[in-house]
Length: 626
Image (tube, rainbow, N blue to C red; front, side):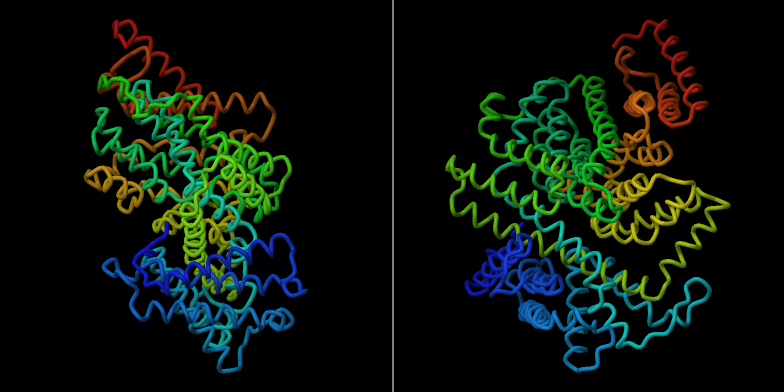
């Protein structure tokens, strides 16, 4: 997480450490309402200071080119310019709060705004890739060409100064929803996640999963599923999840008999689902709760069943594969017992339990991670598990995570300024509603495509925020969908490109760790994660799967979906409990029957159940054994 910190010269290391410490101190002052020199900190001042302390680290810690070791001169220019701009604008924060600079006239105001736009685009390229930077540039500059566009794409004319000022200085641009989301919600969880990882929580959860499941059939892969789910929920990053847990679980799976491609695919799928796994769900849950104006606990509760169904499908996949190929039970090397692992990991388990309690019961969404961090530091200090080098690594990891998040989130501010400032976003929402009156599934297809494309760079939170503002209103008004179901639908499809060819960044990264063919791994990951492509449709059309409705209906649809997924996976793997290996002709029948059974619609479910019962009865009479 520290990037190229160790290659920096001493003065640059001091710069990074000082910015990190001052930035983290600023966050604590703001969240706990402490005064600075007797004055309270305005929101707008805090946002600019946050940018000034952390955004420059993007250029110091993450190279412009992979071959760059020490930062070249232009990285220092970008870092110093970003920091200076942030501090300067923080000084003028009270003035901007009284009268927004949406049409800057002074030369220095224009110069600072122009520099920040260029720096943010370069940060987007480093953190999210060239494609992401190009999208941010084109949509951010859209107001300049909007007057020449036809029909719904038309927008009122703006001068380039107005576009620049609106994008950088307005509450619809950089200081809008994306920056508020990071500054008000995410920073605390990013810091807590960094401390969890640096102090060894990942290893504890991995050891615990190994002790619980490592001895079972296909145990090494089941360990990967559980450990990656836990770690992903805390980190909120698919790729860091793959690297952190995959470096241990993938070699273990290969040693236990799983092919390299299959092992890498399991890790990619498990890591991808972790970012939407309760109780923490990375960053998305907090953004979703803010946008919908609902308690965080409601979002977590809604996400429980979809996450359970997905990880159930992965578990069944692994078990059926191990049974079919007669893989023996194995365990990751660990001399400790479950009791010893729990004792060692008691600080992390206790803090995680407190975090869930504070979020769900006390509803302390903003302050919960800071209280949890204080408890973690106290417990680790009492157990003498917090040496100075670990604390330093945690500080740097925190700053690195915040800088990466800003590099991905700030360009979304430019995009929203371009779409909302011209009125194009509301117009597109209206157009989608008109289309949906005639063809609802066409609108769903458009939403899926856009979510998939934006999620390709692994920027799930950024993709979700953009689509939640532009596409979610159209979805919600069409077919009277449950708003929370719409937002979860978008979130799921924003992460699916991580395991879907041709991009499949999670599968490609896992393949590199396994020494497997990347494209073959991505196709295998798509097969293993097939259930997750359908689950969003299930809960979109049946909110009972989000725990909305009467208990009997909820239980019925959960059981129906679980049974359908069981049969779907059996058809894909060619194996079922009680029947053993399936003949080739029966596999598509079971897979299709399982899919129909899981669809929340009575007729198809009944038909599928009858077909499957007939198949099971016929195969049973043939005397097949498990």
